[in-house]
Image (tube, rainbow, N blue to C red; front, top):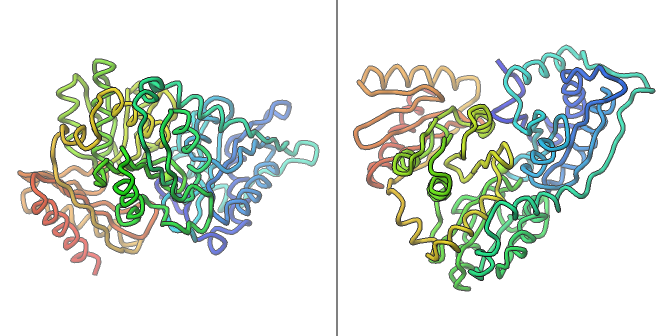
Length: 457
Ligand code: MG
């Protein structure tokens, strides 16, 4: 059982639990586990982070820990999570990303990735925890301390690589008007430049990097995107694009100002890629829409569903040579580019689809299979989550429903499904429901929440 790591890394209140001392010791533990024994050729670890006020503090502590364990460190600066993952996959032996993704400004986190840029597996995380709790970090002699380098070229390379993967001429010809909301997160350093190079007319909101996230909360949910929605409508734009704090997720607003659910943009890109490649393997989680399956069936694809977590999806994509993957929250994974969610290529690909199909986004979305969904969450202390899960699984089985326990409990009903799962990063349960009417979906999610309430007492 892991004590520190959640779904992807460690996420805590910065400088309260997540202090420089903690970060440094954890980084030295990671360096130790990487078994950096060859002193003539030290392991090279890339490091980068998002725009949070506490990122430089934590970053410097991590650099110190890594250097003390004998690793060389390459500081990539402030940049999106997928840009670090891209750099590691192509040039380095491992990586550390300092980010709390979509969480409020007081949080920060540490994500570790392997040489492919994929989040670490459970075994490696447990090994790091063992070193951390036993205080058995390797401290090399002064002669073998790692060397610190900088690489400030990686952002430009990443931008170029995104552009190579879409039909830039088609997008330029479409002359799209795009309102971009980076939420003052790491996307500020990539997204505006990519859209400019795609010939879009770009109107920016919250595209000044700021760790206080003054314009909006870093989570790109509809409640946080009212300014973006209003601006798209006021300016008659073709699309609104929002990123989360570390720019691995893209959320779209259509030309009418409608919030496009992550499931929908996932399905839209899935359809395009399956058409372009005449089929392929799609990897997703048990919490995504049935529409993913419908489209795969129609366009010669197949679907593999995993537990929730982009690193689990990414690893399956790599091992099974999959075409494309993603999650219901707007995180899309293009495995020939980055083994993790990538917001920049997601946005570029959606613009390409609008340009090539010569249809407004609302029309493209209306052509996709229609399901209705509801997402709810409820607080629950971490230490009773398992007990609550077990009791819910028992009750719904007794009621005669089919269930899937790949991750949490997914309950299949005649008109859809409900999934109840504990968050790996926060003391909450999430409950998603999908059905063929909004009423039934809302009803389903409320039922799920009532089950959690019943058993958390
Ligand atoms: Mg994120």
